[in-house]
Length: 399
Image 1 (tube, rainbow, N blue to C red):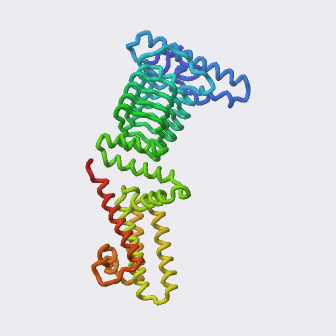
Image 2: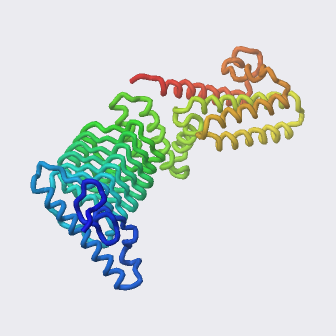
Image 3: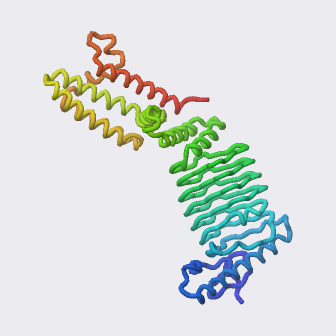
């Protein structure tokens, strides 16, 4: 019989393939429910049984010497969600590299190894691991996980690494304990959850690309990790996410005043993280106030003043609310549009009225009376200037 074409494999080829039972393609080995008749299912089950027999034999042979690492490279694991995982010998060192898992997989089976390395593998279905105490090093790196992956009730005694992975769906850690270093650097995660998870030593999330956090606790854990490393800039990013999650938790019916504070804080400064956004609000409100002042001095009818002021204010607020916390280029574009429209209607091309209005102390030192509307603007602009200072400080301060 011919030998497998896979490098460093001395197993015989399987059926019409040029590779052995471990390395051959298995895309047509479907689940039992997808078969139309018993004959097809029996044939596929025989193949799966043959695969696991070879797999077990390989492990038993490799684990005769506990000092050796048991290596599986480029293995294609068949669909096996309906089948109990095989019981194999306890191995000390296990490495899975460039493997493909075609169905749901329970990593608890592999976590029986004292030291486990899973590198550059592809998981096409859900992944789960639960109820395990892993004693030594766990390396889960450079992998692609296309569906959800969940770790439940696991204690990692040694260093655990989840670096440079791509998680396309949810990554969940529930009832977990990391007794040693936990590394998540350079991973791309669609949605991350930490639920009842404890880190006894340092964790590192540097250069993590996170589309969203599952809840406020997750953002708090990552923020706390960066704070312990004195990485204030990265910590502030997750502080903003923590505040955003808190904002989503609040209800205007139950916590109206707290909700309005969080909502306003998020809209005008992204929770003190975006000074450009604050500056955009300052410019926008000053254009509105300057425009209203010109209306007040040029239109005599009170109704017309109120209606026109209301329309302009409503339009600007509607645009600003929808633009807030998006791309900074939108702030610049909107500001330019506001300037063009303001200048066209008021002829204040040099922004003289605008400049005098934006000064929070101009009315207080001048002869002009302080109306209620101007007072409200001054209070608002003072708050925004404070937010501007805090937002700039948040990204430059040292602990």
